[in-house]
Amino acid sequence: MNRLQDKIAIVTGAGRVGNIGVAICDAYLREGAKAVVGTDLRTDEAAQIISEIEAKHGEGRFRLLAHDTTKEEDWRKVIDTTISEFGGIDILVNNAGISVHGGVESTPLHEMSKVMAVNHDALFLGMKLCIPALSESAHRFPGGGSIINTLSMASYMPSANNLSYQVSKAAGRMLTLCAAVELGPKRIRVNSVHPGLTVTPLLREAFQEYADQGLWESYEAAEDAVAAMGPLGIKSYPEDTAHAFVYLASDESRFVTGASLYHDGGIGQRF
Image (tube, rainbow, N blue to C red; front, top):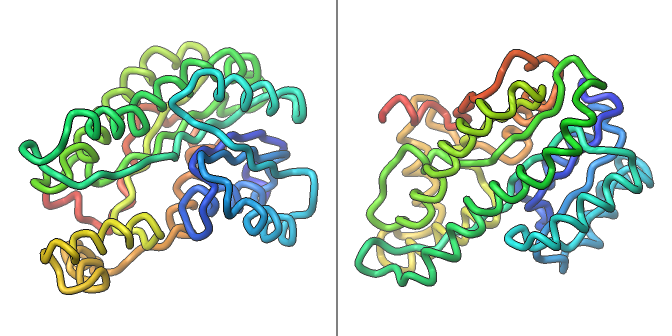
């Protein structure tokens, strides 16, 4: 408890019940964060998410804002709101992402561009625009400011059916490394988390598409098959993954930057 005492965080991709972003927001508040501003392009589940989080952590510490992470003006509104209401930014979690299935032959350019915009360009934009606030607050804690990019085991696992997602996540990995080198002198740490099989609505939708294409009998069969690839042979849930984000946001990781934290059940050992 209180590993993030008094810290202020922005977490994108936190607008869907059962996803990693919501679990991160919940974990940050549980660990004593002063405030968490969750954001998402979709807001149809906002009332439920806000109600459930406030029931656990009380009112006044959590906001959920509509946010297109590919648009600079949306980022500026989120940043300005966070600073004006809570006093600064100590943690940025770039968690929003999308997936479109297809390979080199079947993926249209506009679909490739769309995935790259959300999964890569938005990370760049969020980091770039949050640097002034993160830098200004960096002196407040031993660990300085913290940027955490949600990537994926897809960043190091090639696939013939998920080209745009794999490429965007691999690009995000290098973006993280370059930013870590650049921002270290400002006392801003930049790391990435690479979840493996994590049972979320997005994953089940993706695996259902695989089933519809005849690649698996069902999304459950796809989940079981992927889980079996790792040494642990088990599935992860958003609450499991959130622990990694707590560590990288906390002062316990003050000497950690440019790290790729594989939260993948050991599947990475195969590549």
